[in-house]
Image (cartoon, rainbow, N blue to C red; front, side, top):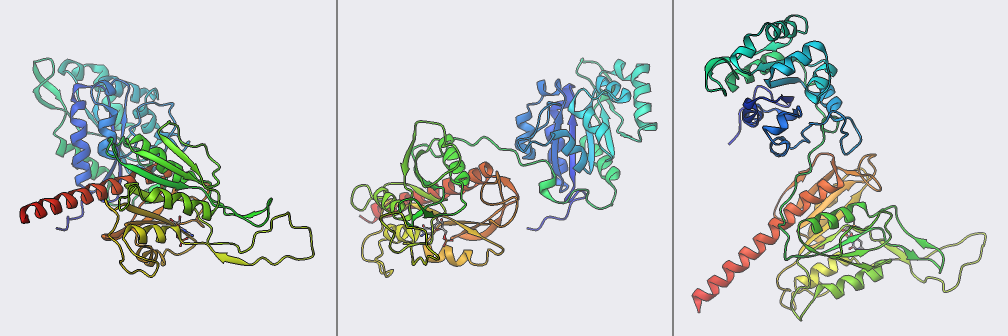
Amino acid sequence: MRREPGRLEGRLIAVGVTGSIAAYKAPELVRLLQAEGADVVALLSPSATRFVAPLTLEALTRHPAESDVLALLPDGRIGHIVVAETADAVVVAPATAHWLGAMASGLAGDVVTATCLATTAPVVAAPAMDGEMYAHPATTANVRRLREDFGYRIVAPETGALASGRSGVGRLAALPTIVDAVVAAVGDGPVRAPDAPARPPEAIMPREADLTGRHLVITAGGTSEAIDPVRSITNRSTGKMGIAVAQAALDRGARVTLVVANVRVPLPEGVRAAVVPAESAGRMRAALLEALTDQPGQAGFDALVMAAAVSDFRPARPAETKLARADSLTLELEPTPDILAEVSRIARGMDADGRETRRPLEPRPVLVGFAAETGSLARAPEKLERKGLDLLVANDVGAADSGFGTDTNRVTVYRADGRPESWPLLTKREVADRLLDLVAGLLDARDAAAHTGLLTQESRT
Ligand code: C5P
């Protein structure tokens, strides 16, 4: 069913939460803004964090919830300044008497005031407090200053039951009224920062230990193929992506075997990671074929994530002694075996010509490949099919923010059982976690299908 475009489609709205009991309504306000199509980011004053957990808002908004005015984002940017520069509006709900006073005086001691000071976006404030506090001349003057001098839209509190048990003016306005005020404040001008990378980054959400009991084999780094005992042909892979996958898998409870070629980053912490060095394509092939079968006919792992950059060619006859300097050198290269395609064939019980000659390995391992391309990803679907993969993660390694040695990656994931998904610019860790979400789902589906098959067999006998 197609959703009607919302009144805040594509906008980034910052929800500032300050320390009133009405802060418990902030997650619901986030939901309503999202229902209007907004991308939402949350800002919390220190006392707001005692009423509503930043994790709640982070989980709902999928952006880091800012609560520390001195904190930096994982990518080194200043979180509340990024919000100030990219938000289409800031809505402070609930706004406490203290916050109104701090804001009226321009005191930027918390992320909510700091963001409002730093932004040129419209600001909406919805006060909520005890009736006497709201009626105090200090509060009245502060509200007037925000409205008249700063041009902020004030959504007046309502009359009703207050936290004190008494009734009076001070209850946070109804959430739909606040949403309407945000829509009116934003108007119909262009979206301020339409590109996701300019906006606050995606939050790394803690995943459950959903890979407990699974054995994942992960390859990382670039292979190097000997020309002679001192020289080799290699590539620019640093191993960052594969190692991020290994660390993420360990964090989710998996047993990990890490097959490493040449890596330029530290290996994951944790003793559970068995590390198998495999410098060349030949060694990597041997390591993976050994790991592939356990008992005859049984798979030795649940999933293989082949993030290594395996050389496609190697010197046909590496010299046994160091080649002497000469006017020129011609190297004859031969193709390396396609390890992933071979693993896939064996797993599916096929011989080298693709004929089914044996029973497939059980349980069928999930196979994930990576395809580094430059410029176009057009060859990716064919690779997925030819190599017999469940998932292929394709990325343009020619792009500045996505490829060898970067901390971020922009990938398109091709799946054997569905449409390709293009993910936004993400940290390699977040790419790893999203990829493992898919792998965990495929493993669960595989096991459920096997279980159903067993039940059907039982009912036949
Ligand atoms: O064909 P291409 O090299 O782009 O395929 C990339 C995928 O295949 C990667 O997952 C890589 O690790 C794997 N590969 C392999 N054996 C090779 C070359 C690549 O397993 N000889």
